[in-house]
Length: 312
Image 1 (cartoon, rainbow, N blue to C red):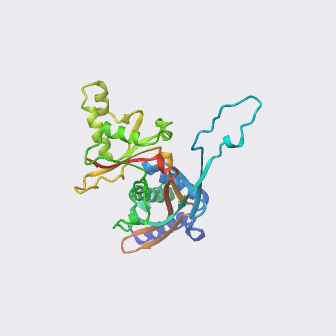
Image 2: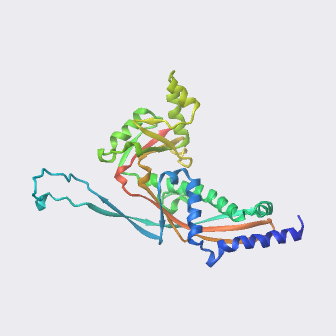
Image 3: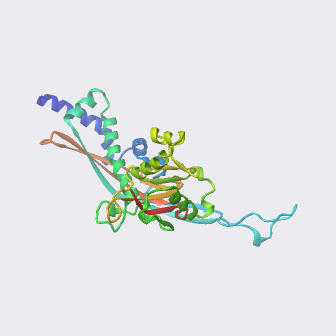
C-alpha cells in the first residue's frame, strides 16, 4: 500500500470519526442509544436483563410492592377502617456506575475495506460493542470487590450480590433435584410467574443437564440430544450464559446457578459514552478508546436463589 493510499485512508477515517469524537468525544444521544443497543445485542445476559440508560453516574430505581395481604372482608357502601387499609412498601436501589475503558485497534486493511463500503462508523461501533459487551458480561456476572483481579474488583456482580437464598450443591453436578431445591428455597411470592424465570448458569452446566435428559431412551431425550431447544425444569428454562464462571472450587471445575426473573437484574449504563482516537504509525493501526460507566443491581434480591459448588 502506498503512502498516498495510507494518507487517503487516514483522511477518510478522520472524517468518518469526526461525528463520533465531536464534543470532547462524548457520543450524541442517538449515537449513545445505538451503541447501547449494540452492547445488548452482543451480550446474552443483557438481552435477558433490564438495561437502564442512566442520566447521571448515580441513579435511584424506585421499588413499589405490597408485601402483605391487602384484601379485607367488605361491606356494601362502607369504607374499610383505617387499620385495614394497605400501604405499599416503598424502597430504592441505587445504581452507582463504575468507570471502565476499552481500546479497539483497526488495521489499515480493515479501514480500507470499511471505507470502500462506506461502513467505517458501523464497523467501529460493532467492533467496540463486541469487545466491550464480552468484558461487561464477565464483570456483571463475576465482579467481586475483594477479587485479586483488578478488573473484577471494580464492582460486585450478580453472583456476589445473591446472598439471601443459597443452596450448596456440595460438589454434585446439576440435576433435577438441585433445580427443585432452588425452587423450594425461594419464597412463594417470587414464584407466581415461573414462566418468566430462568436458571442462569454456565454453558457446560447446561450441556451436562441436557446430556442427562438425552440419556432417556425416548423421543424427548432425542430432542435434547439433537436440537438446541431450551431444557426446562418445572416450566423454568435453563439459560446458559457464556461468561458464567466454570473454574470455581478447589479443582477449578465448578460453577454456579442463579434462579431468578432476569428482568430483576438491572444494568445501568451512563449515557455519556466517550470515544477518542489516535494513530499508531509503527503498527499501522488506528486506536479507538471508549470510556463508559455502568453498574448492576438486583431490584429485588430476595427474589433470587443461588446454587454454589456445582460440579462440571
